[in-house]
Length: 202
Image (cartoon, rainbow, N blue to C red; front, side):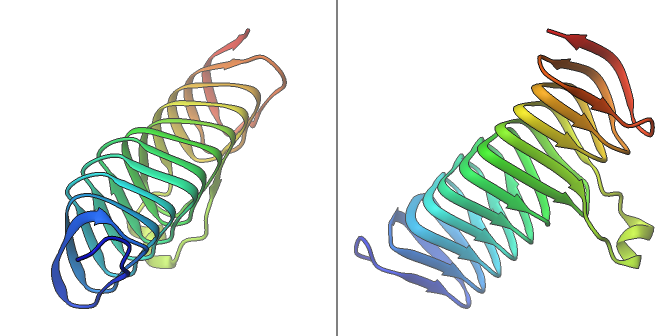
């Protein structure tokens, strides 16, 4: 397929890595190698064997990337996204399930937690982790929490979070958090329904 064409995958098939305009996956697709595009939308199932670089990425279905994900503008997750490498974007908005085995970094990160999200490290200017609404089925069988090793940013607000280290300037820890260590330089607020084992003013 020539460079800068659009791709729409409705059935089951493969896409060769390269540079395209818009990429839309409604069926089941495996992307072989690195891929670049203006916008990528996944409504079905997509497995990427390489890395992704695009301006906007929307995950409404199921998505797995073996490499790094680089989104210059906005990354939306309302389905399930699993990233084996690092994820860098301008803004990340998620109310689905997100798994990142490396570093998630963005200017603005908003995670509305409706299932267990596992992100090894998170870095950004503004980070918000809030409890999302769950169905009765989700409430019975699934926990809604974020599990992370490190969260670091300028302004941090977190709920339902288990983390080894939270580090930032202004930090607000709301209900349902278990944090091993918090390091802050500005203001701190900790809800009495959360546990912080070690608090350090830098």
